[in-house]
Figure: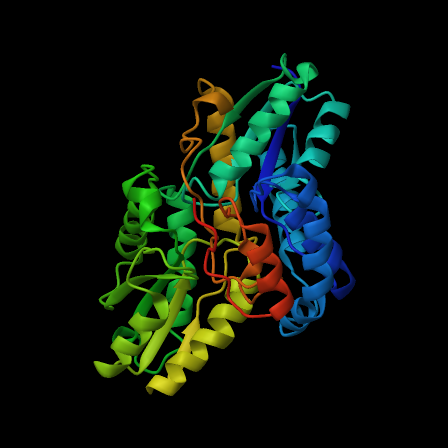
Length: 387
């Protein structure tokens, strides 16, 4: 076995206020985000959006300290994973590849080539697979592989999802138990699992396994936790006129309040790192929804970040992947080419409170309608110009 590397995949986000405008430009320069009828429109449109919306976007990030913590946390996870692998006798170099900000996936692949990695384990930091998260990054990697003949000799294997891993489940259960015990009556607390939403069509038309994996993941966490608490699973961050997975988080919170629930513990079940969706959307927006509905005690379970049980389990997962028959990028599930992809969260032109996880697509947009929407500042744009 030659030199082994692990590529951690994540989405990325602006690290400081000055990064927001170039981050927006990079985001909207990508045809994976907005499909336009003419390629020459892409960069001028990206410049226009980033210019018009940078101040509003900066204000959103100021609410969580001036920038996204995602890169720093992911780097800490990479260091911890590499050390855990070393402790297990594995000389493995861990790399980070972000989808929309530094270090970009392309930068990571360049370092992997430079270091002479001969066997690569591709590990997304999403416990559950979706065509719009892990799948999107896998498609980018497949494109990189197809355009670079020098990568052909390099062996690689893909880990598509890992929500059922015993260490992951145990780490989640430990975090939940620790927060439950802070309540005056722990057994009476309602546990609220909030997962990132996707359109129903992803599941019913494209065969995305995300909903099944989220539901099974929640069941396994509750089983591992082994507490008598009632629990609810809901989906956050919907957008547009299409139907998304239900129940919606904000609606479910209001319904629980109407039923008399007064102690709510929110578990971000599809995230392993703190970022704008946990720090702003859950901690601020959903807290406000809960308090206005009459829930007096609203708390959240922290993200896993570098939880030692979680990191050790990731190390075991990598070792198992190294020894197992490879799953190559061309074998990973993908949607049909004509399948319509939608924004992955509540979205306005520019950064919104959930835009760090933007990883969907808009289908062909009417260029004039797009400009009117941008200039007028009306918002949210609900998927204009459908095919």
